[in-house]
Image (cartoon, rainbow, N blue to C red; front, side):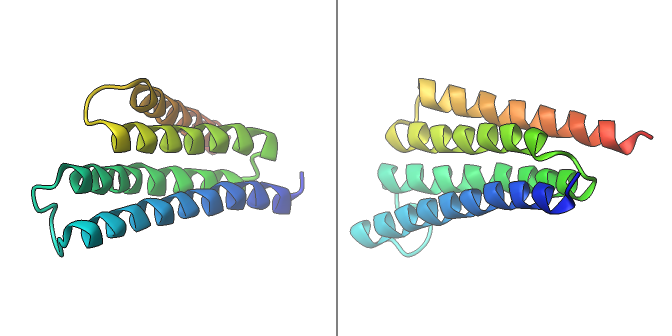
Length: 133
């Protein structure tokens, strides 16, 4: 097992998730400028949605990336890291799209949450597998 390959796999998903966070951050900034709101949401629904899409991503992505990084450190194969990474990333993108379009329940939000939770469960299970000798 090539440790660099595991690190490269985790790095790919970390990089993509960071780009997603940057995009969501830019969307918040655009709404702030459009509506002349310096802090908070100013009672503007579109700004509130953008803030929550970014906020929700920042709530879930760091722990997931820490898990992927630990999987790389313990030598988990890229064939384990990549499916978890793609599930996480797709889930976060879907959730952000769903939340950006509506504050109500939507299939992108529901699918995004489920995909994120699946990636969390898979990461936790894999970490426990590698932790127990």
